[in-house]
Length: 272
Ligand code: DGL
Image (cartoon, rainbow, N blue to C red; front, top):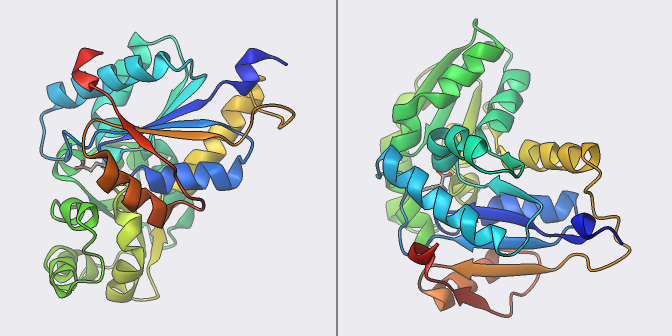
């Protein structure tokens, strides 16, 4: 068996958000093995500088390389927006982000050419979604809105709390009052609030979760490079690592993933 085919895919995020991408990869590519890393000691990324986000991403990629990954998915919009270009040049391994696939899905979905993006402070400040969408179609208007409190609400498991509804109203009112017909969940934590956001925004708005298109891009890449796991050996294994608070992560992950996670290990990410 070709070693490259059975090698795992590295997937990382600042915390639990990237699990929404990992579960989509598992759904679309069930034969692939996954090494997931959540940077729980340094979450949130959305309030950090670009220099820090690049440094964190470099350390995580070096860690994932010790696991012999064949490709890496940055399952974090913030790191995709601020660090992807840099790390793609630095590392000799295929690295995919979530912003380009998410932008493409929105360009295909919008009918009236008005797209909203909800994301972290850093993602919105970078205006990366606007740049990429308008490169694909300069006629499209993009309205970006930073929703920084969504990440701690998700990390703390506050999905059903009244305060979450109030914060959704606080952040998304200005998007709801525009004419957007499509909205990108431009942070991988936000799909975990999807039903609440859907109820608030109403049925007429198409909600785009970039995870779906990202997993499709990954499949194309693996097939093109002859690296797809055909399922004949060592397949469907997932390992989870974090930089802190493994038990809390493990409990959360068990509520998101389609199978039980036996253990999550802590690693000292600053050493990489
Ligand atoms: N889930 C990440 C994203 O997609 C990061 C959120 C954060 O750590 O602020 O942007």
